[in-house]
Length: 277
Image 1 (cartoon, rainbow, N blue to C red):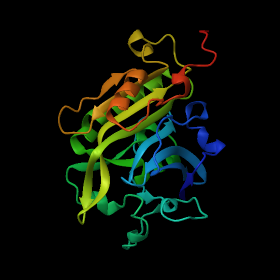
Image 2: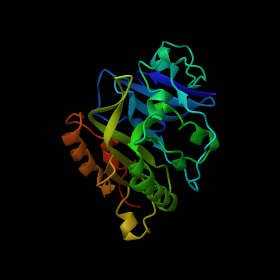
Image 3: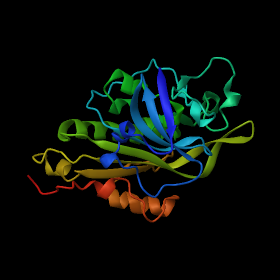
């Protein structure tokens, strides 16, 4: 079974997906809920979910070395606990009947995407950054998905995900922690004249890998231990730009609702024993 758990304070087994067990700082709103995403009885990644705009603000996960293949036979799932107080942390596949009224108040449902020509379901934690079949399957929840413009999703953003996979496959020796999120500007996908899904303006991503190959080519070594990127979720001018994590944080402070203390990785992903070997 798939599962997810809405938690006020993340349990220790969910903090393993965060550098130094620490969530990004400076992102708080009443409508934001922390989800520990479970699948087959194990935690798989962490999501900060906005129950107002019905999309994730970010997903935080650990990268797994892989060949980039996708798992395509997984049913899309939803999170019962966002809508009801539930004893179970199990996330459920969408029911075949029209039983969505009970939980569509707090999250997306399949119908929200079905009539959209321009937008696709874009995973923040992409299955190609996972290796284990269950880790891949756990990414197929609408709580890990945002409306992505098709041309951006299958073009620049997909290319960026491929590049990061190759870079971390080749040069990250230890654990790579990734946080991928969005900015919004108030535009929404509507259904029955009701705002249903916030449409991201930008997608952004950052990784942190302390233990990396110091003999890598400079063009790659210079992007460790931490680097970042953002791209415009649009049909045009949607090139994904790489930058330092500080540059990304400065950018997000200007264009979204993070506060001045915003920090993606604890201590900016500087190893506590940062003396070079």
